[in-house]
Image (cartoon, rainbow, N blue to C red; front, top):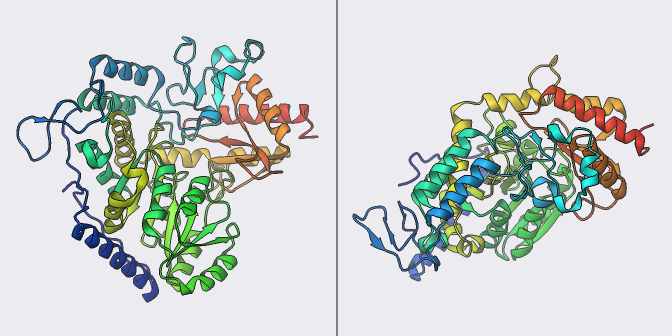
Length: 511
């Protein structure tokens, strides 16, 4: 009832592709029937109020006494807890769009720290603050005016958008601070179901399921879906969460060379003996800034009767004409079977992930996916913020066009294949930039110590970037990953390039 308009994907060309999807549906529906027959089906009652000793449940009139929650102290809807959440949202924003070691650490006790300012392109010196001495801060050329942040996955600048923050505040006040429960016990509120329906509609898929993070979504998918009869074929540079998720399943595992379609085809031929074949790839690769050739991948999958899974964490919200991701960008939305993505980057930047795809698969994940069954529900504030971010995207794609314009030369046609302003200026200065026309712009340096030292000196120039080295990237491929946001100005980009040139010459990375 919560998915108001179910979208049925047009089947990809070729009988084998049709057969693969039909086979998936048949297998999954058989599993679901077995769960029902065994009496182990887990339904989700939908709560329409805050969590507490007395709640309201959809379809039942009056209050219901709740003896299910792990809300031992009754603090999930305590007014002071909620007020503290409201204060944090208003002061520190909806999310960080980052991991802790990059630019995801805030310190609320420091009154002068205001991380991720409105539109989040300028921050007041926030790093791993305990690792930065007062001397280093005092040596920063422009710390009083704020430091330009080129680290966050805050692609659309929504992490501190006022409407996103207000939606979080409203969700806190209406639905409480948390559920103190997993989804199938008493952790599903109407806002969770509504967000899942909105995600499915956004991606033009049948259904969706929320997770605490996309790492959890990737950890929960492969084990629940694939058996020793099946095979998964994974790009060698897929995100660590995809790799870890695949390790958890018992399917036969094939790894193909990065973006190498000849190698993928060879592996698909070898995998013909297996029941299901699932090709798994990032849509946009987070460390390299390159984009998977989904047209070729989907064509090979159709030829060899395989399904396609895409992780869209670094694409959702801003790639494609309406921000649906790499499948929209490359015109294969009807050929990608399963999408995993995040709410913790472009869509508000707090936390949360999801899987969207065929309805029977999503139903199976609700019954079998361990991270879903054994993790607390997303907090209402996170749900509210993400829901508003999707509303902003679906109501007006002007913000998507903004990030597109930021990454292209103005004199060239507005197509994503054009040379980005930042890349062209950096390459002209003598730097090597990995990837092609994605807001992720890795400055390749090779040496781990050099990348860290340059990043430290960039901070003194008022630019927040981080050196990436092993094990985040392979040994010998250290880099500084620069990320362009829709809210960076051309002046911001030029200032960043100037700082790179100065620091690069200081360290001998440039002549």
